[in-house]
Image (cartoon, rainbow, N blue to C red; front, side, top):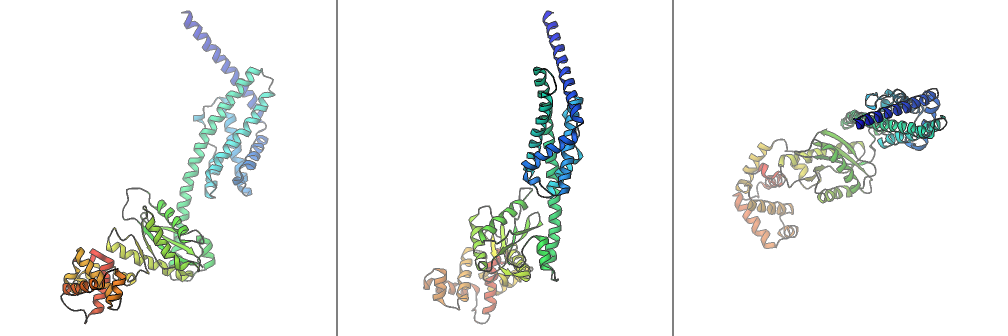
Length: 432
């Protein structure tokens, strides 16, 4: 019984002590209430001096002041009236300031740091008030401990709120900006005349440079987000190619992106080779189709058209092996002219090549040898060098290919060359 009584007495003493601390803290806060404007100005000054990213224009500085004042008022009110942190509301100005920073692409780290600096500055002011309060040393310590606990709790809570608000606004702002940018890019791609300088500023891309257009895509994905990784891949590709400015990226759909990489005229001829080498070096590379590096507004448009045509061939071929295609690849531009009519193409290829259009490794080897032989002006020697084969091997394969076709090629050589070209690019899509 005595033990229970002693525990109850101890609890009552703690309650009285807590009440004394709360009353003393409320008295100190009431004095600070009359100086909120001055306290706000001091804290704001510390923040601006410590976080250079927040030194914006007059409007943003004013909103920062309102945010600081709202946070200070909320903290002081929570201490003075014993309001639990989970029951306070975030100041409107604090949330709006977070949104404004997101719109201006100020780092969220700057926002978090501002709260830490502001907390430190406010606690210094509170400590000065506690020191001059006339309270006993022990009570001063208890009061400052309580104020510190409330302040830390609030800063931890409000930091989460403003960062969440920042991220939501950032996502919304980027999505909105990207939509507007995509509309502008489509304006550029149209055949109409535009103000090149104004459009360069609007899409933040140098339209007067040489441009290597790229179409990048994945056939399917298990991830809910592919555009981000593809855009990062394009940035890396730009560095590998030697871009003279950041690439331009536009989402066509959730699995496809259009991009342009600006290059100097002196390095334009190397851009495609570098792009191919980089794509082959990356195990995570998506499918890529590129146009030729071409200059100016017309080059921006034409290179994109070439990249789209190259992609159409890759899509129609439906081959895992064909993951990079350039419009300058021999025969690809011609093959792209028929990309929209695969069924008719398949029938014509079979009519032209006969059994040589069969989908097997042996006939593929014969077709490739015949294609190279005809491309070398019917020179066995030149074809042997290109294929790294013996002269007699080339001669044998060409003879076997003609036998498989079932008739000579003298009368319709052009048709045969085109059919072989289509087989080379479209593969099983046009084979029997």
